[in-house]
Image 1 (cartoon, rainbow, N blue to C red):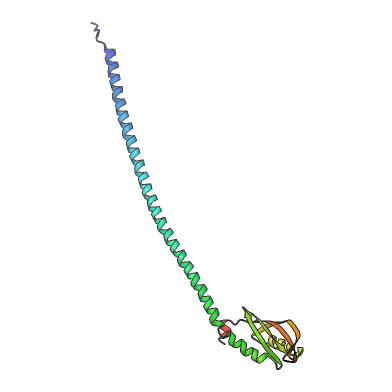
Image 2: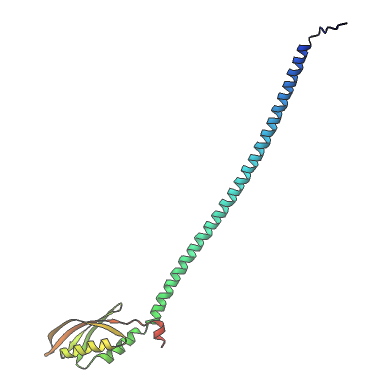
Length: 187
C-alpha cells in the first residue's frame, strides 16, 4: 500500500533549515566578534608597544640633547681658554719687546739726533725728534731699516725749527716693529 505522509514535512524542513541558518548566523557572528576582538587586542598591543618605544626614544633624545648642550658649553669654555692661552703666549713672547726696542734705538740713533717722542700703536712706532742735518735723518732711517727688530721706516715730515737759539730739523718717522715668535725669542 501507498503510504501518504500527511504531516507537514516541508514546513518542518524549512523550520529546521531556518534554525540551522540562525545557529550558523549566531556562530558566524560570534566568530566574527572573536576575530574582531583578537585583531583589536593585537593592534592595541602593537600601538601600546610603539607608544612605549616612542616615549623611550623621546626620553633618550632629551637626554642626548642635554648632553649635546653640555658638550657645546664645554667647547665654548675650551675655545675661550684657548683664546686666553694664545693671548698669554703672545704677551709672554713679546714681554721683553720694549727693552729690545730701546736697546735697538740706542744702537741705531746716530750722533746729532735727539729723540723727543716715541709712540707705539700695535706694531707701528712713531718717532719724533730733532736732527742737526737732514743727512742724519737719512742715516737714522737706513739704520732702522738695517735693524733686525725694525723695518719699513718712512719719513712722515721734516721741517726746520729754531730750538734754544739753534736751527734744527724737526722730523717725524714711522717704522714697524718685527714681532718675534716664541721660537725666535728662545734662540
